[in-house]
Amino acid sequence: MTDVARHLELQGPGRSERIATRGNWLRAGVMGANDGIVSTASMVVGVAGAAVSNEALMIAGVAALAAGALSMAVGEFVSVSSQRDSERAELDREHARLRRDPEYGVTRLTTLIEAEGIDAELARQVATQLSARDPLGAHARLELGIDPDALSNPWHAGFASMLAFIVGGAIPLAAILATPRHIAVPVTAVAVIVALACTGSVSARIGRAPRLRAVARTVGGGVLAMAITYGIGALLGTQV
Image (cartoon, rainbow, N blue to C red; front, side, top):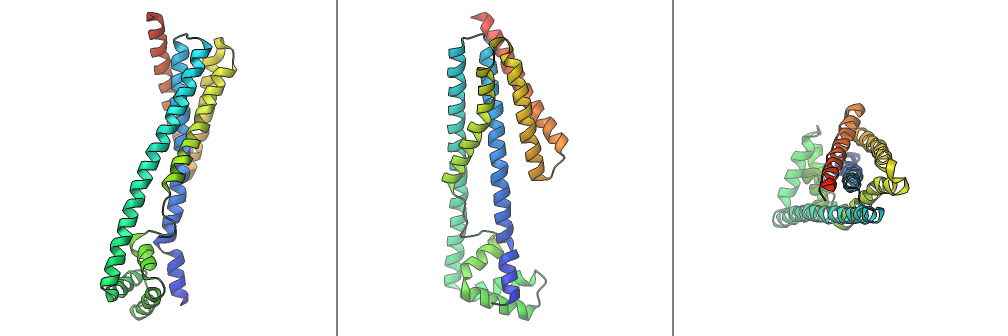
């Protein structure tokens, strides 16, 4: 294989797709933890606002944590399964097309390689070498932006989302259960603000976005959610 062919395999859309996939997985983990923090904190603060017993508060918090984690796992599993099915369908269509017309594959690869600034004659030679070695893999990476050897795994995605949610949700749950009742809500609010500031900062770094704006948005949304649910809990608690 020529140096040009090797360069295209390493630097083509397939490599970019793998980098983007890793970034998306990391971002999804951060967002899963953020969801766990906000939803669990809102639940336990709202229940605390209703002035229920510590046992009822613990049951509500654990139930919220388990339900949210399972919901995240199922949602991510279904989403990634759909993505994987779509990628497999694209690969099957491309494989059938290449079997019907191998020359089409070489011509199409030549066009794609030329678009990278490679001379037409050299592009044809590279396309021929890539087609002889692994035609489907070459088309998948250079044309479809898919790495056939690194398709998304829905089981991994579901488990990762569930774990991220549990880790995030455990923070407000532990904070409200481990502190005296008369200061439990303020302590939980502080713990949530710190945790959300961390997730907002990490998400901004991943997306190369302004950190202060991301942190303010994340913390503001979480505080608003807790305030609303606490108000609802307090209102309903006085009615019971």
